[in-house]
Image (cartoon, rainbow, N blue to C red; front, side):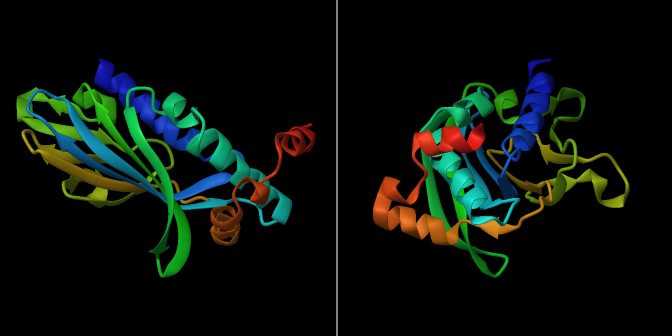
Length: 201
């Protein structure tokens, strides 16, 4: 039952991080599994962006990204079953364009903590793609290719699981320019807390 509850929590978490101005082009999971069900992994948020194009909205969202997600506790609250060890932002080429992406490295105590469910009768592992998320890729078998359920299937006992999903967000503006400004000038590239409070009123 815990694995099923975790599937729902992770599905809500993926949607939750996309609320407001911050959107994510694609989530990519890379999970290493131990035989006892513990493990470690990496979650990459490809193409972090804004769903509004107005410069102050972009700056507001990027300030939230730095203060609340990178330097704050929002990711720990969004993914409570993951023991997050490292968080970072970086530039990469994604779908032919330069974008800002994020990455977290984590460990976990049970296989259900990363949304995987072991179906013992068939000796397989399942991951359910919930809500508006679309399947992108996996090193397993996607059952929804021919109209089947939106689940990815792996053989039980695999020590490496990879999959990527997208919620197909509306992206109006990227963070590349403000990211470069922040890397060069630090906090001066962001809104102050007083400015954030005034905008939020």
